[in-house]
Image 1 (tube, rainbow, N blue to C red):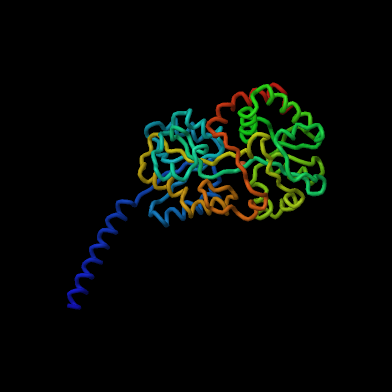
Image 2: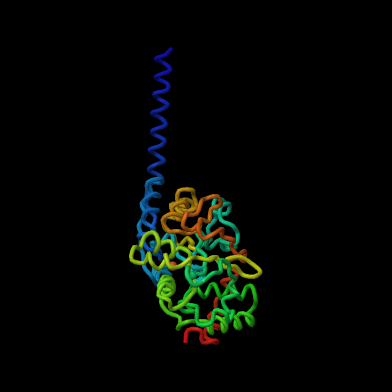
Length: 342
Ligand SMILES: [Fe+2]
């Protein structure tokens, strides 16, 4: 009896192994990811995915031109997934015709409607907020609105990068979504009048210039401050000279933007691509976005990194990013009209 049981169990185990091997073979393979995101940031995620799913990730990374490349490759494109940041670039990919809708109950459940395309062409997988860096010594305020940035009390005290840079373009488009074009033009003129210097540099330089006393406050993304504080020893003093304030719209919340995923129109490894995009919103990947990239996880219930949590609780604006994208062009026109970058 005992022997029989052992044999039966033995053969069941043997069968189970055969099935597992069979399915492991079926799942093996590759997925080709085109990414604008630094591979340094993304590689740990891909390695973890490969470990979990047994699917090799081939990465092609570039700082520009990936949509054009996929478009030029046409139906023969090896691209399965494109990872990109900022609603402007995301919509560019969709407009280039290189995407196909993602149909996934998993993603629909995890990703709130304001962080995905109504047609399913893109899904946000993590968020960043566009906030204010302020001098620890010279700025007493602990709360601000975006509208406040045009208040003459800040005259000669604000630093910011180009008004046409995608992050600012999205913020200004969000301002239009809240207030309309006429009010936004007025606000942009006011903000321009408050600038300490011509728009220049990137978000890190905002902290640098505040630390150097050139300005008191500036506009930048949430993750740069955390990177400077924790990972960039030579820039740590810039973070230490500043504090992060999460501004809000008077009639809304803090402006957030996305890093997102799109499924390539001719994805040759579509099944594997779907496994990857669903994995990216899972617990493990979302923790990595929070702790390696200092972004806000799109999946509810995943803790933000302690440095980011130190900014205070994020009350994200609720206007859908797809709506904000509709005002991108108008925002770019206003920047030219008020001579913001001149
Ligand atoms: Fe960035």
